[in-house]
Image (cartoon, rainbow, N blue to C red; front, side):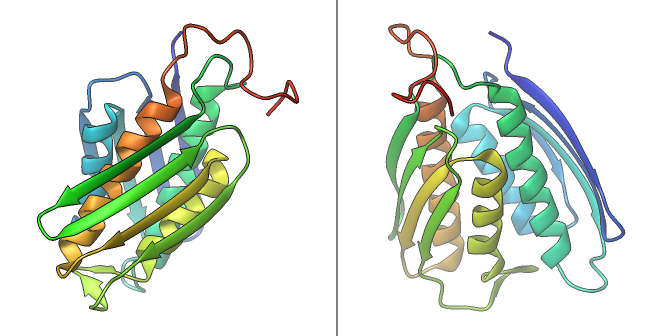
Length: 194
């Protein structure tokens, strides 16, 4: 099974190109113009063992909002396309990941129902050039277009650690949910469809 996708999202505000290999090795080439966002996406690819290429040019002279949101939407769409009808996946995954004093917990349902509950305890308005309020927003955008149900919470004293632990937990949970299930025949739903 080859699960790959390429997505281009071009608007008056951004130009986003995402290439995804779900069953990869964790390599990432990410350039959004926002260092912390690049770091979080690279971390997500590495710990999920997804191969990921992201190139985003956005209106950063305004702020980071459009760049972050549109990149997240394109990334989610890439997962949705790569998974196709979602046949033979495990569907559910969860992970708890510590990073020093921080801990994050992620629970994912990749069954096609978009929803996000995100509770990240940030204490500062930004991490580098990435506003902390954008992190829950980008995760919600990702869940919407990936068609994942996502529950993600994280706590800690260092906002960098909170954010990084959250993306590591999300990666591990997504990897578990998207793994092929050798016993599954067809779509993992009693409805028979996503």
